[in-house]
Amino acid sequence: MRVILLSWFMFSISLFVAAQHPLLQSGPMNGYSEMREVLVWVQTKQPAAVQLVYWLPATPESTFKSATVNTLSPTAFTAKLIADQVEPGNRYNYALEIDGERVKLPYSCSFESQPLWQHRTDPPAFTCALGSCSYINEEPYDRPGKGYGGDYQIFESIHKKSPNLMLWMGDNIYFREADWYSRTGMVKRYTHTRSTKEMQPLLASTHHFAVWDDHDFGPNNSNRSFIRKDLSYEIFKLFWGNPTFGVDHQGGVTSQFLYYDIEFFLLDNRYFRTPNRRTTVEKTILGQHQIEWLIDALKTSRSPFKMVVIGGQFLNSEAVAENYANLKEERQMILDRIKEEQIHGVIFLTGDRHHSELSKLSLEEGLPVYDLTVSPLTAGSNTAERLANEPNANRVEGTLVTQRNFGLLSFSGPFRDRKMLMEVFDSNGELLWKREVSEKEM
Image (cartoon, rainbow, N blue to C red; front, side, top):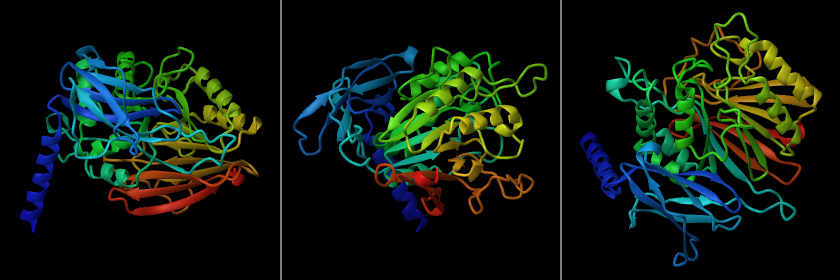
């Protein structure tokens, strides 16, 4: 039986490799989606002319094409292709052309344009996958011993859930010592991770958005002092398809986007962060400018659920690791502003900790704040024994997970009565727990 399984595995690998265009390195990957514009990212192995061809499934003979982009070494042979002839509320099939040759892949490639539902219908239902801490082994550069990464089938499990979008919540790659201080090293690490075979079908049919944490920003626990932070910022922008990067020309990966009726606020917890060991300065994680922008944006938002994405845990009560509880004053200031401004529906989505859990804190009656931590995807997981001395007074009972896992958020229900179902699955796609929150509870 083992021989049969091994033979089938090797056959599947050979099919996958044979189907690739010789110049295709990784992707295609869907980036942001708007009503009239969609981004698709791709990376080649050497300079090439890349173009996107897309069509409606009902009329495959009528195709549209993006502008041609030439991939070059200074941009890591990456291209961001813009589909700018889409109409709202459609799912399009697509294909890549590299140097004029159609790329044939052993999985489907499709993207969606957002629907124009406002003033017409109730907001449609949709799902959002999420996770953090994605470590892909590469033995020559890993620490000696058993590989830290594993269970790469988790990306196939996510793909089978058919989410509309996915949030990568930090440590999406792990820079090693050989990568930290050079452009060559950073590009190599991104390229190695992004080329993971099990990841490709998910990249090609789901829209992806990302923030970073320390390991895809720089060294472990890195902060604003990292001398190559502008380089890691440049490489992040090359490899992700977020709609924007940074606010008010301040740098960093801060962004915001609306998906159907739900707003997502992507925060940067590294670019402005004070070194943990500083003692003679008022410490910060987000920086005052980013905090003011966040409160402005949350207060402006009319979204029933306001999803705040940040690399590290926000509501965990324990001042351990790099939790926000280490800066109690800044965290309390943000919570006070949410309370004073009466901003309802705030839910933090966080990673970093190599375990998952749901935290809840009521600022006053009828004004709860949640923090859904989902970690790790493929990196090593925490253990219940190690967490025994970290009680987290805000943890919702029954939600602690100490194995590789991913999350799924499902939004449904009529306008002004939306519901959000939170589910956490193991690496094989088996449900571990679920909780539902309604708009009226927030």
